[in-house]
Image (cartoon, rainbow, N blue to C red; front, side, top):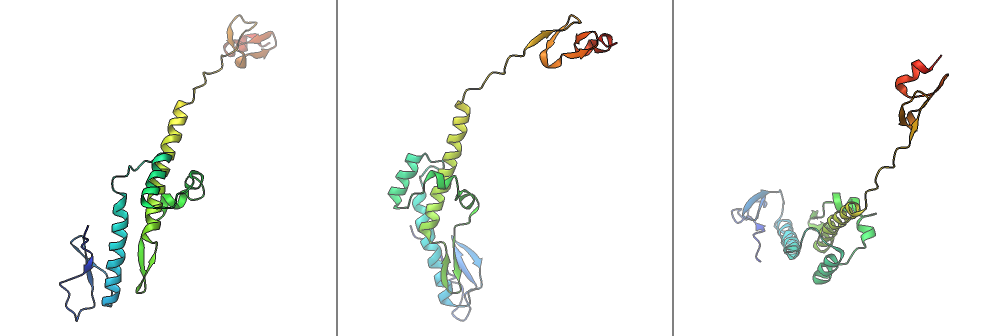
Length: 179
């Protein structure tokens, strides 16, 4: 697919490339040089072409789907324990994009961005699987309440039985059963 990332054709050679076209929109970024503008456009063209390969992949992946996607795209797989463990914060909150460092491309390479996007989709799958496991666990019925008959004649939960001077009592009869 051809991308529309490139130096602004409306800019004259005397200008310092203050804009680029991104998907047909003028984006203002002071580049200062033709080389920097070209590097910026090449960086984003490469990033978009790599990330477009993710199209058609579900955004919630089982382990099997994740492994198949990684093999198809030649992306290094991450273990579920890493995805849902030490890397979880970075996967959830990281901004994996390239950037320009001076006139050179820096930041994250498109392949790493692709790896982290797949990992984020696997993380959504892990969370969904955990939710299903919690739903599948049997709900334990509440323990039966042990009842006891008090000296006052009422039957109440054992935890509510009170000791009064004339014997055991329910909370309602405590004053009458106390001397």
